[in-house]
Amino acid sequence: MISKSLSSVRIEIKQIGKKFQRGQQSGNRGLGEWIFRDINLTLEQQQSYAFTGPNGSGKSTLLLILAGLLPPTKGEIHYYQQGKTIDEEAIFRYIIMSAPYMELIEEFTLEEFLNFHTTLKPLKPEVSINQLLERTGLTTARQKYIYQFSSGMKQRLKLGIAFYSPSPVLLLDEPCSNLDQQGIQWYQQEIRQHIAERLVVICSNQSFEYDFCDQIIDITQFKR
Image (cartoon, rainbow, N blue to C red; front, side, top):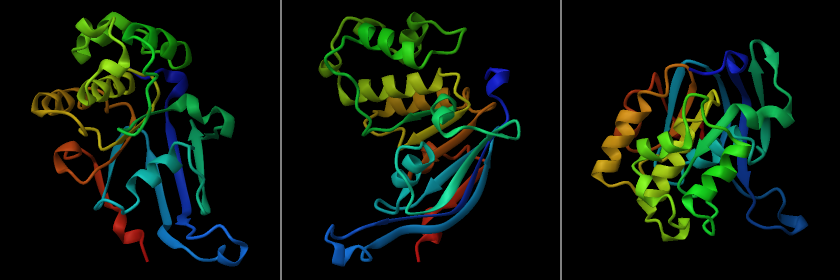
């Protein structure tokens, strides 16, 4: 259950667009390609959204903007909790994100990493580190260094941290990347247990990663 103090989160996206410049010289500042533009959406807690589209369509870029990790070229995003604006510096407390390109501290053992990570982003009060390890199937890897992990183990760790965080906004980019069939089945079971009280955004072009979502939005409609 999400903490009541972090409930009723809403994200309002107003005229958001992102353009990557083709050159850094002053004469080229106006050049570039719009990845997407004029996105107007309201995302509500207790709803799940899938942004779909082929590779290069801007799904990951949009997710990074929603997470506050990348600025838009135009437009604004506003975050609200129980109708009140969330201060920009506090947004990170409400959001947890998992993506295959996110880095882990590979010089740590798994146990060291989780002890460090949970000082910054605690797990749900009812979930211990031991329980997280058990639920992700990583118990026997407790003393292994992260650099010794397979790509699938790293992905399970990232997803487990996201699933068992109390953050009300869950952002997932291509969540089944690097997972084998057993890992995909694990994801499909786990995700359904962790979406009911949250605002969930999944970016993917694989339907089995998002077929449970309330709304499916093709991001290519915003490219013009």
